Length: 114
Image (tube, rainbow, N blue to C red; front, top):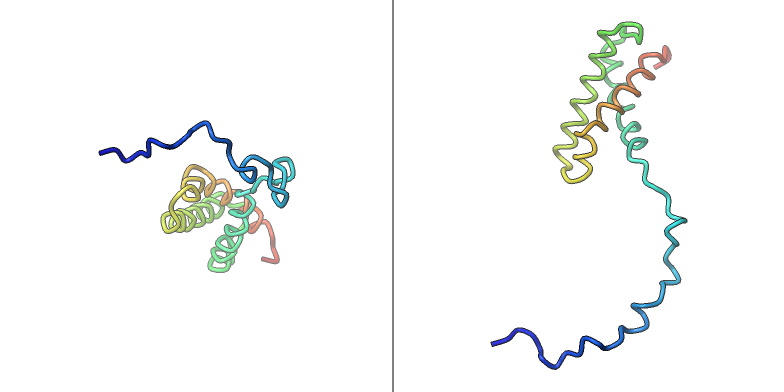
């Protein structure tokens, strides 16, 4: 028994709708790249600010304070990555989370008004 229809003609032309471009699709050049790092930093700002609120005496001049902030933010991002899974988790766990944490903790700890 064959699951294939022997009467199929593979040389038939594709319908015109499949071969022509779609009028409502943007050309590849017009599509902008998704900057995941920027969005990750936005999330990290909230986490770093929360850490700073719990440690009001922390400053950017203290290497220990900076390292503790980075560790706390990176840990929370890793927990979020585990919950989300997939390629987003891979991007966070392969360095995106710690890079965002480093950049944001320096900014938040340097901001005296924060």
